[in-house]
Image 1 (cartoon, rainbow, N blue to C red):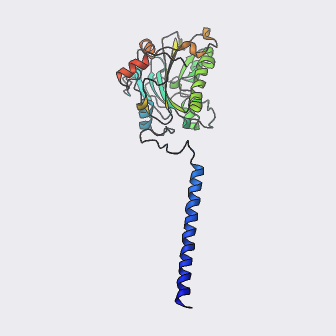
Image 2 (image 1 turned 30 degrees about the vertical axis):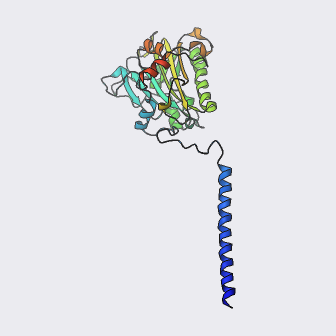
Image 3 (image 1 turned 90 degrees about the horizontal axis):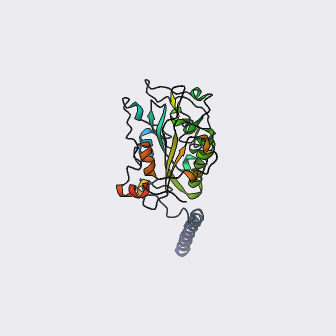
Amino acid sequence: MNNKVITGGIIALIIIVLIAFFCVWVGKKIRDGITETPETANTAIPDGQKPALPITNAEEAQRVYLALGNPSSATNNTANADNFLMVNNAYALSYNNSRGTANWVSWRIAESDFGVAERQNDFRPDPNLPKNFRRVTPTDYTGSGFDRGHLCPSADRSSSPEANSATFFMTNITPQVPELNRNVWESLESYSRGLVKKGKVDLYVIAGVYGEKGKLKNKVTVPSNCWKVIVAVPQGADFSVINEETHIIAVDMPNAKEIGNTDWRKFRTTIRAIEQRANINLLSNLPQNLQDTLENRVDNK
């Protein structure tokens, strides 16, 4: 075999190899073009603004759930029994030992918080309460005519049985008349989840109580009012994106049978009005001028 034949064979082999590599490269680009849609292309989220995944530790929970502030400056000092800060993977709250309920509960809702976990329905005393605090039990509500009403809803935490179960701690429960719990309050809860699912937003939510209209078994204070504040941010963003145009919902609902099945929108109010009635300070981590704008506005959407 002469040198020309050998050289020609080598050149032909090199050309075949180069063609094969080119075909593989083109195929990969085609696959990438198919899998990368306009919705997913060029949408990298900066660090610090990642989508909120289910929380797995108390430190992260406190950072996320109290991002807008600590409404009553609650602490984890047991001497501060009526404003005692408690944080778990599902929410943060200020517990009031004298009332036997939370003053407020704060949490965040993202699409990652929704899943297929069933409602656990395991109402029970909160095992994280200090030993010297009173233990409210599900039977303290028995025969009272009041529902065991969630502040952080069960359906906001369906990503896992553990997350859902945490919403049934009695520290997250307050006495509500059935007309409020099953109708008006629930309709706002459902509306909120719809915003997350359809509007592609995440929500910071704070719910609480104030006032007194009796006690259950001399242990659990029945609130005169239940309130809630909702702050919407773009999906995956953190509270730093909140501005004068941010969608804010604030409601203050009477805990009374007369509420019937009224549209929840009838109870919209300002954040500032809730602050004055409940003696709290909401959105305290935002600049004061932004607070002034948002807290004096009534939602009209």
